[in-house]
Amino acid sequence: MLFFPSHDIALAHGVKHFNPPLAALRLQEDLASLSDIWNGPFLRGEVAFPQPWGWDWDTRKYIHEQYKVKNTQLPTDQELEFLRRLSSRETTITLVEQLKERLHDSTFPTPSYLSSTEEVEAFMASHKDYVLKTPWSSSGRGLMRSTIPAETLRKHAQSTLQKMGGIMGEPWIEDKEQDFAMLFFVGFDNVQFMGYSLFENDATTYRQGYLMSNEKIVSKLQVDRYKLDAIKDAYLEILHEMFAPLMGKPWQVGYVGIDMMTYRTSKLQEDESEKMLSISPCVEMNLRCTMGVVCRLWYDEHQQEGIFRISPMEKDGHFKAQFLTHLDE
Image (tube, rainbow, N blue to C red):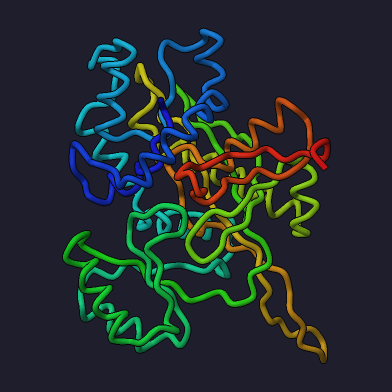
């Protein structure tokens, strides 16, 4: 069992052993077989031990005990803490700032890291429509938008400051068109670009992902292909530098998904004001496997278009993952 959906929550608590909620344990058990999809190299005997959903203290212990892997072959406490820090949404600031510098583009939306009550108040006062995000969360959780009462926001922010030391503040992007992600794999000595994922979220949870080729995803995004390629190439350099201290180890960092979105923004052209399609290149970085990775790998193997869905908890108390292809219609 290498699917640990409570990984992000465990990172938020920052403890060496985390007891997941019952619903997370049920999800973990019901969808355990998904790990076969992202562990192809292990199943083919190309690597010594499998890749977990994400690295934390519990997954390290699990691999040590279940696969008889020596602790000297696994991440140290210091390396796990390094990964935990990089998993924070605060890392999005570094990624966006480096993208701006490398691509000479100052238009990318940049979040703020707020580490005090005074900084939170100043941010709330200076933005009309915004969202506050906890530094660690899972699948869009930990978000509170400015449309709710300000006092509720202040209490949420204060609680997050006490528990996690800070909170993210971002201008709200109203005219979102599409959620998508760039997918990477950080291996023993390099970073590889895996491709794209296209997906839909509701307010707090992953709804579905699309099973389709990279070329079709890029076509559906309707954005400048050269700009996408430039962002991808910049990320390959940035991630290689970011994870350089963890390369050359007996273990691999693994999958990294950078969530993005396309959105409409007003731009004056000649005498008319029209909505132009723009890219927000780093909504957050998922330093773990994602359902987007599952979709990418499944499609690359089967070459069948369709939709991947995870059902809500059903009447029998179980979850179900479905790959719905055109053959099912």
